Image: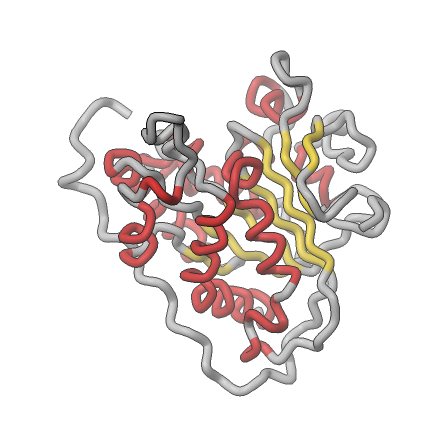
Amino acid sequence: MRPNTALISLAAFTLISCAPAPDRADAPDNTPPQSNISPLSEILVLGDSQISFGAGDAYRRFFSNIDTNCPSLGLDRAPVGTAVVGVRSTSLQNWTATDGPARGVICDVDPKYGVNAGAYGVTSPQRSYVQIGKDPAYPFCQPDKSPLQAVFDAPGYDPDLVVFAFLGNSFQRWQSADNARVDWQAARALIPDDKACVVMSTIPAFKPEDNRRSLIAQANLGNAVRADGRCAFVAGLTPETLEEFEGNKSHFRLREDGTVRDPRHPSEASAARFTQLQTPALCAAVGRAVLQ
């Protein structure tokens, strides 16, 4: 995909007892094909480090083949250009910041590696590591603009559907419903009216304590998105995905001694399993998004 046509993750207290129950996956959309579904030719997925380390290719393959993955949508059997970009240690507030350290997480050159993002389907279908704002294919760091505004303003970037995949880096901040609402409203204000939108929270972690905090953050983000009504929401932590991922070493990268090396990032194979489990909910959300 050529860059000019392509598109472009509290105070200490016990969370287990107060964590909300995980959302159940949305029911499959079994309605007949819709004649008023808007055509989808380009999809952009923005997220955090789970995309760079595990989930990016699974997301790219799911959305690139959305016509066959979601047959009830009645989409034309035509290729869907999908770009997936995950910037490590980021969340929604980084994409909407116009200055300061929050914006710097995306726009400042990574001091250790020199790059900060893993991207799929932009300059190649496989993952490439890039520095946002320095690589010409990712001109998202313009003066006096937030990175998200720069995405929508960049020549050649015109997604029909934008998907936000965030949670882990904000699971502390989003213990507060007010913070989740403020962060979502800032992002929502930058989404052009002609863009369909889906918000999905990310893949469960290995450790139960991480997931208990993420359940609270997910509930607060989901409530903010649903209350606004602009975009569809898909919960990544459901009874089914928690049962599949939590405590399951086979879904995470391991050390030589068999212990989990990275408890918050799935393997590439397990990310594909996640999209398989989430297919009914993702299809239903895309259907709601493009019909709004």
